[in-house]
Amino acid sequence: MSTDMSTTRDTVDVIVIGAGPVGENVADRIVRNGLTAAIIERELVGGECSYWACMPTKALLRSASALRAAQRLPGAREAVTGGIDVAAVLRRRDGFASNWSDDGQVSWLRSAGIPLYRGHGRLTGPRVVEVTDAGGGTVTLTARHAVVIATGSSALLPNLPGREAAAWSSREAVSAASVPRRLGIVGGGVVASEMATAFAALGSTVTVLARDGVLPTHEPFAGEQVVEALREAGVTVQLGAEVTEVHRDGQGEVSLTLADGGVVVVDEVLVAIGRAPNTQDIGLDTVGLKPGSWLEVDGTLRVLDESGSPVGDGWLYAAGDTNRRAMVTHQGKYQARVVGDIIAARARGLDIDNRPWGRQALTADERAVPQVVFTEPEVAAVGLTASAAAAAGLRTHVIDYDLGAVAGSALHADGYRGRARMVVDEDRGVVVGMTFVGQDVAELLHAATIAVAAEVPVDRLWHAVPAFPTVSEIWLRLLETYESQTRSRLGSQQAEAA
Image (cartoon, rainbow, N blue to C red):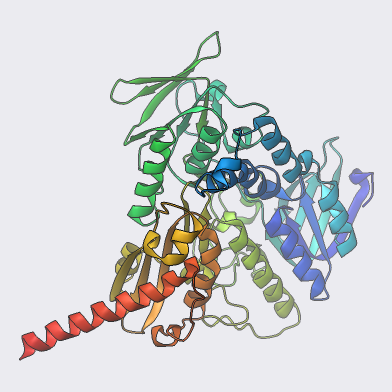
């Protein structure tokens, strides 16, 4: 790339705006398909996941999780002679965030043959993107085939009086150089729950103000068990609490005023109420779209205009958070691989196979999105919740089982507590949703994801025998319960018919 951007004009097959995990995977897939790609990034290559989300957050959580696991096992418990070393945890976190340097990611782009343009990318017309660097220099890029928006999302900050000077977003919380004595958290979703778990373990006195509940999009029992564990860890959880004002005084204390007149005083406050698309200043208005909006896409991730038609002749795509299909990193990378193949196929005039579960389909976004919430206990889920399945019009049977009653769980940790739920589509005889809550259930999730994505018949799952004694024996217990309840139900129906 030329150092004199003001005089540069380049042409490539595909331009990718945003070099987070999604953008990197789009560009890589394009190049692997024999086309050329250029990628634009105004911050760090690697994006939110690498520096302020997935990796550093799990590093903050892991040490305390390992300590709790040891404390639950006689023999190991006696070997634990101290508590959490906060400084060591923060150093490890820094390492997993690459100390906020993207040298390694830039090196990977170079090795993959993908030129990086550092600066702010803005559409200026069909297939044209202008990049402005920190010094004000510009380069104009033109795409032969497509432009892909992969700019991700940022923390949504409410318009509260005093919020601007007082609040952390997820970025400040994850990269904090020290642990506040008192931390207030506004919100009850994944970020709020994980950060409450992390900072309580690191020594903060934590108050969670969750207006809409904790983990409201998951099965209700997941949020209930996480709330119970947070409270056992000393966290104050106020369900239904609504913050109306934030104020930081001259001594640095933050006062959170609640709708009911109550006041919570903390040293720092994290606002974690959702995400907003990073589309405010990328030139959407030049192609007839509204700046700052989520991008509507079709089944091949082409951006749609207000009439529901692809922008222009279908040259503009959006992958990852900006299309709001499935806002988790691994699903964004899944979209990236698929859209790279789609663009390459269209460039060669080939047909697209986007039938359900087809080679260039994005069916998993709708039916098999896996997610782990690294709280205490962990929550691992894939597919539909019971309520979502019912809302979709499916005739379902829901099976719950005490995860702590499985022999493998009892061996895994003394006093193991947890729960599993399987949602079966009765008309097709397949599992459409699974949720696990308990210690280390993240490692159960991929088997469930395969069952849901492959639409494995329940009758066939009987032949997938779980090894004894492992926590995976939960599959056998769920199937046994399903069979028992089904027979009982059929017996009742036959008796009524008689």
